[in-house]
Structures are given as C-alpha cells and as structure tokens.
Amino acid sequence: MFLALEDFRAAYQHIRPHINLTPVLTSETLSKRVGANVFLKAELFQKAGSYKVRGPLNVLAHMSREEKARGIICSSAGNHAQGVARAARMHGIPATVVMSRAARSVKIEATRGYGAEVILHGDIWDDAYAHSQVIAAERGLTYIHPFDDPRLVAGQGSVGMEFIEQVPQLDAVLVPIGGGGLISGCAMAIKAINPKVRIIGVEAAGAPGMKRSVEAGRVVTLDSVGPMIDGLVVRRVGEYNLEVVRAYVDDIVLVPEDRIFAAVVFMLERLKIVAEGAAAAPVAALLEGLVSLPPGANVGCIVSGGNLDLTMLRDRSFN
Image (cartoon, rainbow, N blue to C red; front, side, top):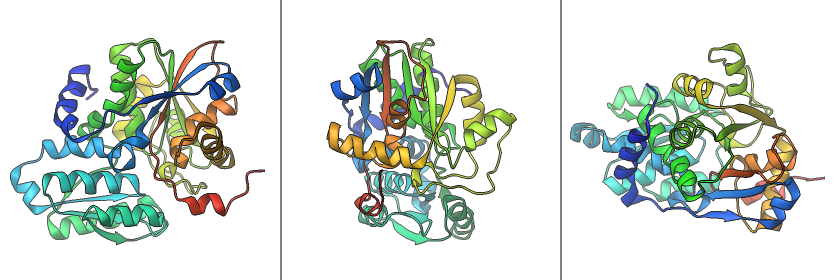
C-alpha cells in the first residue's frame, strides 16, 4: 500500500490545474537564529489557505459519476473542511461538513463561504467524525477522510514533491502531524526522490498520538488531548498513516503549546508570515532546539496553512 513517485505524479496531474504552486521562502533572521539554512514551503498561499485542498481534489478525481451526484461529507477541525468544500465547488459536487463546536469561527465561515453545509457537533474532531458517519449512512454520501486514505495522502504528498523539486539540496524536512496525512504523503514523496533526506515529524506535546503509536507499534487512542491548536488535536491517528510513518519518518519531536504560539508571533513579527498554529510547529521545533542538525544544514519547514484566528493571539500571553 506504500505509494511510489509515479503515484504522486499521477495525483499531481489530477490536481495541478486547480491549485497554486506555492513559493519557498527564506529568512536570514531565522537561519541565523537556528544555525541552519531554513527554507519555508509556504502553503499559506494555497487556495483555501492551506495544503488541505490537494488531497480531496485527488479523491474526487477517482470517484464515480454516481458518487459525485449523491454528494460528499467530511469531518474536520477546519482546514480539511475548507479544502473539501473548495474542491467540491470546483467540481460542482454538493458537500456537507461536520465540524466540532471548538472549530474557529473564521474556518466555519470560510467553509460556508465555499458553499458547503456545515454541521457543528462535539468538542473535538473525533466527535465530529463519529457524527459524520451517521449522516453519511443516512444520506448515502461518500465520506472524505482527512488523513487515513491513500488517495488523499497522494494528493497531500504533492506538497513534499514540489518542495524537494524546488529545493533539491534539502538535508531534512520538518512536517507538522495531526492525523498523519500530510507527513505520510510528504515522507513517501520526498524519500522517493531523495532517500537521504531526513523526515522529522512535529507534534504538539499535549497530543502526541503519532509518537505514542510509533512507540507502541500500533495505533494508540489518547485518553485526552491538551492543545487548543485545532490542526494538531487528534486523539487517534490513521492506521495507514502510522504504517507509513513507521517506515519512512526518521524522528518525531514534541513541542509545548505555548512555544508553538510563540513561534506564531515570531513568524508574524520577524518573518512577516501569517502561520496558523499547526503550520508554525516546525519552526517552533527549530527555535526550541529540538532537532539535531549539523552546522549549515539545509532544512525545510512545511508551513501548512495560514488560516489564523487572530482572537487566539489577542487572548494569549507569550511571556
């Protein structure tokens, strides 16, 4: 079930007409601060504000005409909702999105703005997921999983494929982890092009689902999750994603929530980049010295999205 470079290139052919080729940014300030040459893959400039539109576009390309006519449904903390809604609108497919009540208002309104029906249910993604399965069965809708689907992973992995082709000299790439869709796709795509590149996952310390699962050798369901960073809050990572991470990812580091928020502010103030919490996690890992890199290494960070709720900044202290 592992994907080859040909799978990612085929997925890219499906989605390329509908997405932006996002830029790679550099920062002398950040590079000096961490002692490495840092490259930022800026998916905040992607359509719908994050990489999440890529995977659904590839899934839709594999659906039958009958499935498209009945419509699709997903569950999401926010960015997957927008990605699915945007992809559905591009293809003229009705979309329903179940989001947790904790979802940021900016993401809820953006999802509705793309024409999707939004249903709020539960406190975290796992609650919304369970409710979406009930609705899917009742209405005969096709469910678009946010991470545990090889077709979706092939689309998400196009981020890594683009990145390594834009910056072939990368020695390591840091990728945020929620359920595991982005890192599993990027790890396979990047390693297919250059197996020597280190892939390092970054999780919030309060939601270490992937790291715990790798250590246990099976998917572990967390009893509770601590962070308020919606893109990183998942109690149970994907089965498929775990198998890929075990085979392709070199390390996973955990970053405290307050340091991730501090990285959001650092990127705003010093880099002039609007990154949401999950997207700032790789930079936070570098700023906190959690990744061992030789001097002068070329390290990439996937800045996965820019759908930042500014009220989160107003309400927090970064001392």
